[in-house]
Image (cartoon, rainbow, N blue to C red):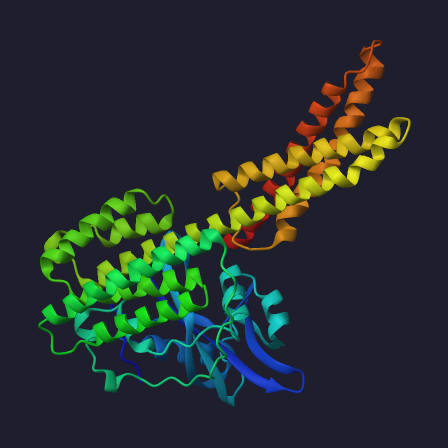
Length: 448
């Protein structure tokens, strides 16, 4: 069935799973499982055994965890994370049920439940699986999943002829609508186009120079470059970057030994600049003498680097969007609170106190975004704004403290600057407190 066999010795844990679909009276449903030991809801998946293909592992694990004998469909994508300090990569396929039996794995799996897609997204415990499932209906089909998997296996296995690669069924997807690009996006798109065009020339040179009879790696790289152009047509920057990175990894199969050693030296230097687990995993992959550098080690290291770069780009874009939202919220708050200044008495001070509390909480949120301390990858504005609004309300506590101190220790005039400073500080503290509490909860949940 499969062409890509997981190597027996590899510093990266390989796993595979499936998203099982069926049509019911309620609509499209998917199957999710509850793991007893981890106390979480996940998509069915498991580790690839020695000598086993990713596709075989996916079908086996799905049947073990759900009791469903399935037919393999289209390749959907990959997620990766750290499992006790070791990088783990999980590949997912779309599947359809051939025969539904009783669930055999009762020790690990407590329940397997059919749910509509929105309910399943809410039920899943891990954000990457939520994202994968949310893109199920819109993700473009990977036309050549065989070579995409071959970047993670030894070179002799990556040279399988195209005719022997498995055919994976998929449902045709509608073309992505073109969206209007901003000036910043236009610059990034232009740079991406230049890099893709330059790499196409480099790829042609490697293909002509290669002495290998099988050049499926070059065909796969050309396919990915074509995908880059399709992404550029729809202004999909992230999709274009992912496809260009994949094409560059395929091209590694066209390098000679000297070039492999040079590329490994460059990746070692890049790994030193990556402070996350990806950098440590890259150093582990490349911690062998240059003569022992293999294509699969190099492509695994490149994939980890590309994943880190893509995540950083995503975080930067997300932080920019959230900063713009914070500026808009502050501007709207100034306009909305102006009428309160026309009131008389103590209630007149509520407006500036709330405003300075909001400014303090917004300042704290902006600082977290710009320094990268906000580790959430969920592009949810409500999650980002809730601590900000809580901090604005916390500014009222600063007002209460100020009034108490004035009544208790001072009999002179009230200094508005002190009141506003307290509101600002209480707004910062309120936002930071709620944000820290939320991050701690997420970390505990991830460890569980």
